[in-house]
Image 1 (cartoon, rainbow, N blue to C red):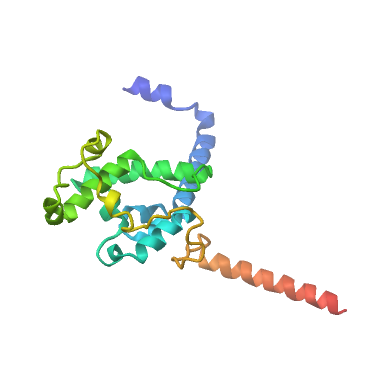
Image 2 (cartoon, helix red, strand yellow):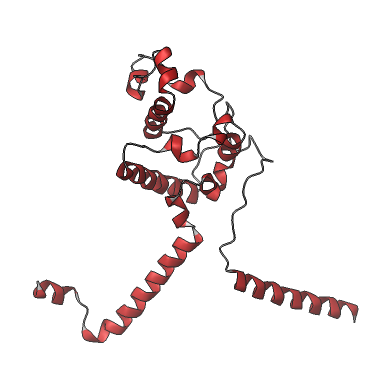
Length: 208
């Protein structure tokens, strides 16, 4: 064990530089977590979804639907079998979404993927089990649908909860929660005061 540890440790003269590099790396990582509001993704708050501006149409259409009074985004879009499945799915889906949105690779019309489709279908059945039993859709899964053996819930209930139109330009004037600035309040005040001073100086120079 000591041999492996000695092999991994840098030479003594490099230790100060390694400590500085690790400190910078940890600082940048912590700042990235802060700027991206990463902690919010552990919650069930629907406002978290509009951390990515491309999700604005989906937040707005959900907010004006009947589901908004009794559900949040995670009620429909993540598994509820156990805590591990829930947060594993959130992490996997979140990393995919963050990658696509960061590289601006999202399509104009966003469609749910197969994994998400399966989860939403199961959650429809979980919440509306009594109604599903009356129309014989309780056992319908994504696999059944792909083999022509039944329909998914939203094949009929297409308007619930996001409506038929789901392009990024479908609700351009929707009122959604604004993102909070990642700049600390004390720094914001300082930069605002500096900007005010410079503006006053420019105005004084123009009046001379």
